[in-house]
Amino acid sequence: MSETARMPHPGQTSAERRALDRIGCGKSPGCSAKTLKALLDAGLIVDHGGEVRRDAFGLYKVPSYGMPLPVHYQWCSAAAFTDEEMEAFEAEMSASHDRHAPARPRVGNFGIKPVQQAR
Image (tube, rainbow, N blue to C red):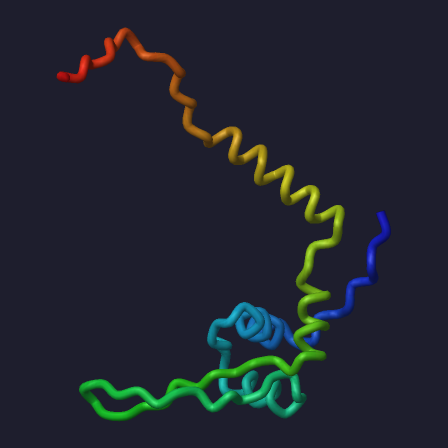
């Protein structure tokens, strides 16, 4: 099997990597303002503006962020499983499923007689 080279994660710190992982999966960054500013300044994320919502206390803004396409490609390459890692993961999931799978019911009528339909 040929394996493509894995690119390094675009985040420089663990906080940046966690925030990029969340953004790459479509979630909010969930990081400090300092980390958010560092990601924006480095061009690793872009501000999509977000949306304005209203509740009992008034209007508030929910920001949203995304990754530029080249950064997203690099993030995907860093986050993706290699072929060997994927095989190991699938084997682990299969073994886990086999251990926890409920027993399959027996096939048969279990002594139940079919009901005769009235004509």
